[in-house]
Image 1 (tube, rainbow, N blue to C red):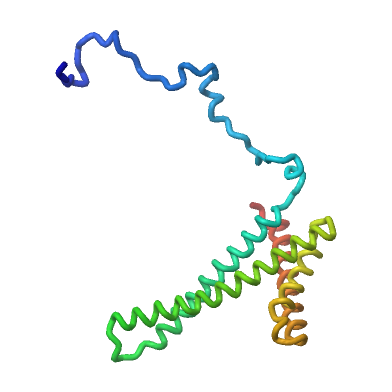
Image 2: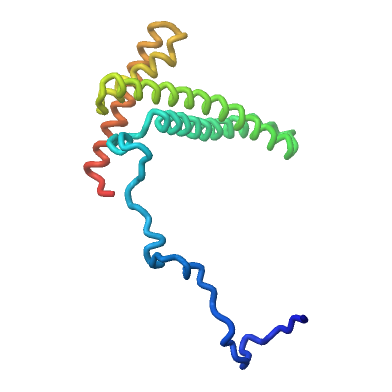
Length: 187
C-alpha cells in the first residue's frame, strides 16, 4: 500500500481518526496527576522531626563550599601572580601558559586547604550536636574553635590556640550576622 500525503486542509472525512489522549485509560482526573507535595517527603519518620541537615549533608555542603570558594579565590590570586610574572619577551602562548599555571597552582592549594577546614568544621559541629543533643550557637562556635585548633595543631600549641580563637570568633561573627540578617532583612 503506497503512502499518499494529504494536505493539512484536506476536505476528506476524518471520522475514522481521533486525537491521541495518553490519559484516557487512567481513572484519575488529569488535573490531579501533577499535584506535587509542597513539603519534603521523608523515608523514615524520625527524619521529619529534625530541623537541620544530617551529618552527611553537612559534611558534603561545608566541604564543597570550602573547596569551591577556596579554588575560586586561589584562581584569582594565581591569575594576578601569573599576569605579574609575564615578561616583555614572552609570546602569547607563553603568557597564557603562565596565567593558567598560576591560576591552577594557587587555586588547587587554597581550594584543598579550605575544603579540609570545611570537612573539620562539619565533623566537629555534627559531633557537638550528637553529644549535646541540641542545635544552637554554642555548637557552631565550639566547632569553629576546634577546627582552627586542629588545623594548626602541627604548628605547635601556641599557633593552635591562636587559630582556634580566630576560628571561634569568625564563626561567632558569621552566626551573629546570619541572625541579624534574618531579623532585619525581609526576604
